[in-house]
Image 1 (tube, rainbow, N blue to C red):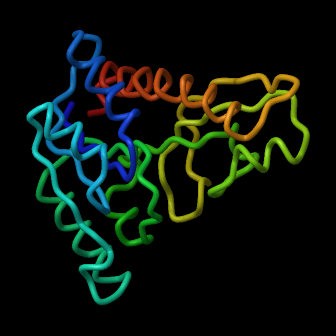
Image 2: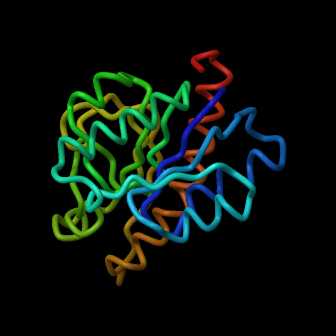
Image 3: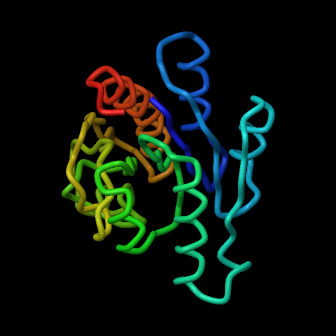
Length: 189
């Protein structure tokens, strides 16, 4: 299965994919790792000898042209799946439609509860006792695409947004690898 991994930050989700592939736990070809800016995730990909690219919004006159540039770069790589592994940009409906049910994203909450940029904070504020992580297909909404896999994470007494998010990230890395493995095994790539 051929994938492109998109990152925006430290690249810990990417690293979990690299580690699993290196250990023979994932049968994937990482065609490239892309980002919206130079970041630690891109550094990790370069260190692993992978092709990298950056499509920075600031290099384009508007959001539409940025989406078209990203769409063209992704299409040229011909991936079976595009994995948003901590990619912190919302892409437009045209790009999503081009790769329908082929863009996989993670979210730090049990969707459909607590979508958006502050899932962990929102879950804590609401007072839930169980939250978690969701891996889902991207659609034209914000965190509204079909759910692929979920894992629960308990909220413990004294949790802060930071402590809870760190526990969610541990589950997120594992669940992302498991999801990619299932997609590959199911012949969906």
